[in-house]
Image 1 (cartoon, rainbow, N blue to C red):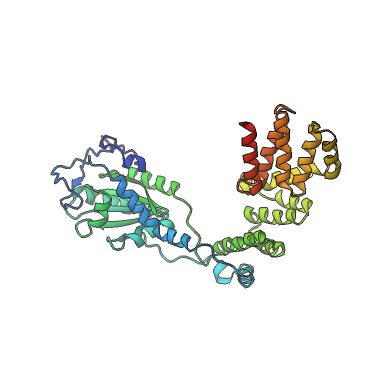
Image 2: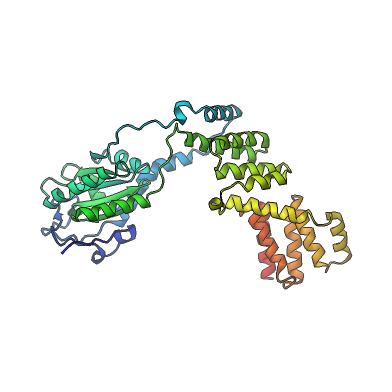
Length: 401
């Protein structure tokens, strides 16, 4: 009778023992070292659960370097740096060329001291299986060849790290390993899956394929064209925030020479055109974003901003509409049109106030049109825009008044 394992998610790793898979033959070996066998069990029953708390603490260790980098804050980029980025992108040379990678180190022995580099850091680029084993463990000798064969078959898509718990019990103890063989899968610097006990080669292959499929994409190499483009896009977005539309347009345009379908650069360049008053060119550029990439928040916000701008172009001037509202405060259509025009003029808070005023006077006007238009404004402005925050407060106050 074959063994049908159930993939352990992190939640199940932390659950009750009866949810853990059991191998009918051969049974996993109970470890003899107190660090990972505190109850001095003598049988081979893999009933002990993997410790959720210790797994999470190990995850935090793996994230420590990323947290440290984040705490340094954003790096200030100068115009000289921008020019350097442009030059490197326009002439990729060795950086942009697809150089053949050296032979992958697919299978290696590791230790407690090497765990961070060999597993946590390495898994940020490629998923890693960690095989906790011991020389005296019979099931380990059956499982390891199957693991190694599958790893070689995958040709670099996943790696294997083997840790002898007799020589290196530290990490095994932190993970709460009490029976071996025990295999943990790491991806993106954190544990994502695992199993205990020997399993047939076919099941090992399916397990590895699930880990590969679920792994996050690897970060591009620091000297690759992709990394240079990502860095250039950051510089361009900082230029937009600083109001330097010329520099931003130059960088976005250079990126698009090498990656014509890059949606970040397309949306960024379209926003530059829109902020510069070139709404038609913004519309044309935004239409170049591939259909499957039009669900991003930045794309939707700009799309709605252009649509609202076009809507205002067909209305009267703000002075005329303000006069109509002053003459008849219950002229909701004039106040509604005024809000649309004010938004197009960049007077966002005033536009929100006009719509809230309609809502206060008549919530049912135009089938709740004032509130719906205000929500369109929020979507176009973005959730963190000061006008969005104030508009939401005004709307909430009106709703509960």
